[in-house]
Image (tube, rainbow over the protein chains, first blue to last red):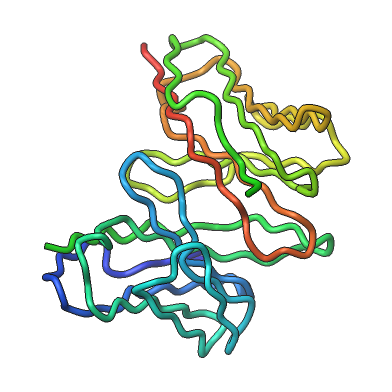
Length: 115
Length: 112
């Protein structure tokens, strides 16, 4: 299994541009997540999905959109890039066990700079 | 609001020492805890987890201790190596909830 893969690895955007960060997992996990991590800080949840066709806002959803048309893919869309969106973005997936607990597996991240 | 937090932002140790990284949580309903390791430029990687019905769990060179009375979690790394240098995050979960709450992280620096 490749696990969780993210593309691109790096991207520089101009203010106002849009882009889609791709995330794919091949573990048949039904839960997927998007986080952002600012320098020296922890992870902040942007959006998550508990299955195809279902998405929910996390802690910092403003300026982002997601879709979940398949189990494998969970793209994150930035419509009007702003400097405040400069960050490293991590995608994660999980398959909660029978007890409902929830180890998440992370991708390698996308480093985004908005100038 | 309730949150997971860490006591020390940076911990510096000598190679071969034992390291202890601490985490405080305030949500008494949390019943599952995870420690992640994040190396520079990489995504977080699972190290070890513990459920609230346990006080201690051991892995390879790592031990997690859970004290529910004072809502405290610690990660002990035995014979710390330079390859252990990373940021360590604790995270908590509650049964039936889809998301993890992550702490701020502690950077562990291991000197040869």
